[in-house]
Length: 139
Figure 1 (spheres, rainbow, N blue to C red):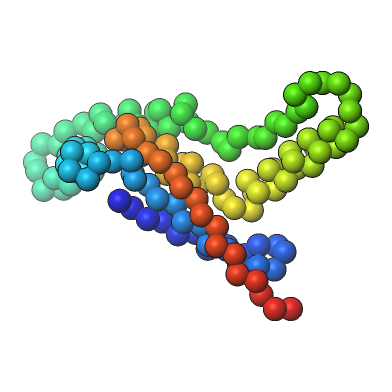
Figure 2: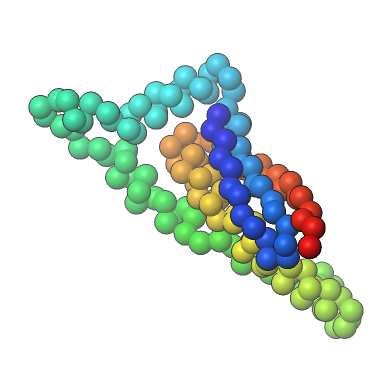
């Protein structure tokens, strides 16, 4: 199980740490051995020591599929469920949409989703768990 940590500073003046746990959906015994086997095939570390190299078909297929699976972060779309023209609901939807867009920019979800995409393409498994730990800073 790989653990990546992203440290960034928030424009509001706080610091947060984002932990994303990759491959946490793998069962300990069964999934880990098959994942190690796939990882060994993907890396192909014998390419520098053997005389006749193999064409790395797995790597090329993964690189071709990456943009098809996930190319850019999703843009939030929040709308009123009943479309009754309520001004308060319209403003609340706009506020939520702007907040989600801001959080996507600040928390760097793109990195976690790209790591998830890579794990999904290689191992056909992957779960992203993001946890933000806020620490207030004195002014």
